Length: 393
Ligand SMILES: [Zn+2]
Image (cartoon, rainbow, N blue to C red):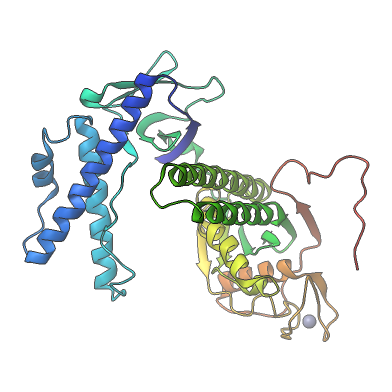
């Protein structure tokens, strides 16, 4: 079974809806905060950590503004968070970094299981105990890809998680491709015969826009008194803006990985470990923000859109000539001084990553892709018709 998510943007319309929405989200936060507090106390006293069913018993009747399944789901999420921190610490992670849940929330996402949430006649019904049921119109453009499993009521958005039959998962073709992740070129992929190079400039500019707007809002917020009405208003704007930007980037990543999947259907993917030296010329901080935001998401998407993604060590992969093995640094185009190979640098990286994946080593004498397709994540490069791009020197 495969899980797919559908996102709907939604804002409460009526006063009643607003009340239910806020009360449920506040109640979810209250439950979470109680769990955080209790966890802290139990740990401090060195007591045994209760089981999930003990917690569920404890919570019974305490949170009347949530559906009983919602309560169980949030408890489950909390226990998972505690458990993963415990695992990390066991493996020797720094306790300052691997923290147990510690943050208190004012609002939190409300999670509904398929026993709580219902779909009827194009409407989604989300029950919240005594706070009332939310009725949300599912837009006509949205079709659910499978059986509804879980719903998440977030800030101005509703996420539906569906379970789909396996047929949708791609059939492995036995082919293998190498993928190099970068910044200006977000993805370069090759199977040795042909290559696809997808521009990362749109994503980069979105990240830049996000940072700029965020800096502006932060500066504005700094002039307001803390916890004042105006400061909170800016806080809300910030959150909404960030959520939107995140969705935009995710959309572009989906389009990017879909193009790779269409080009090499069912291939096994070898992908270089992020983050790489492709960002060497860029402002380091910004480059990191780009790759941090994207790389793990891209790998995850490639993993399910193709026949699995395997992360490999990619040291020197974009500096080594795949024909003669000579190592040297290059800018956008790789020109080997030994054998005269001329190839787009990110393609060199992809060819070498494929070699590392297949033979666990950077071997010379690789097949060089003869066809290189340059693509954008979106449908068009976004240049108005009739304006020619002029090369700058
Ligand atoms: Zn060479």
